[in-house]
Image (cartoon, rainbow, N blue to C red; front, side):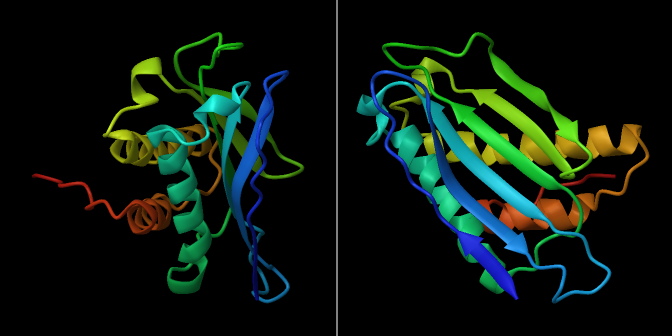
Length: 175
C-alpha cells in the first residue's frame, strides 16, 4: 500500500513559509523487509509574490510528478531524500549559493538538502530544466554521501525515479 500526501501552503510576507509540495512514501508493512522511503520536494520563501513564477510552478510540477510516480514506478528502498528549494524574495534571501547538505538523521533515515535558487531562475523559461538538474544532483550527492559511509543506496533506482519524474533522458555513458 502506498500512501501519498500533497501539502500546499501559501507563504506570507512576514516570515519564511515552508511549502511542502510532495511526500510520497512506501508502507513497509505492505513490503516486508523494506524500509520506509520518502521523497520530499519543498519550497521555502518569505515572499508570496513568487507563487505564480515559473520556478515555483516548475517545483510544484515536479513534486506532483513525484507524487504520481508512485502509481507507475517503484519507489526505491532505503533513505528519505528531502530537498528544500530556497527562493530569494523581497524580504529574505538564502545566505548561501548552490546546494548544501543539511545533514542526515539516522533515526529518521533522512538526508536533507537545501538549494538556493538564483534570482535569474525565478522568471526563467528554463525553470523545469533547472529543477530537473537539481533533482539529479540531489541523487548524485546522496549516493556520494551514503557510499562514503558505506550505507546502501541504490543509485540506479533513484536515477530511474528522477528520470521518470522529470521526463529526462538517461545520462549517456560512453566507453
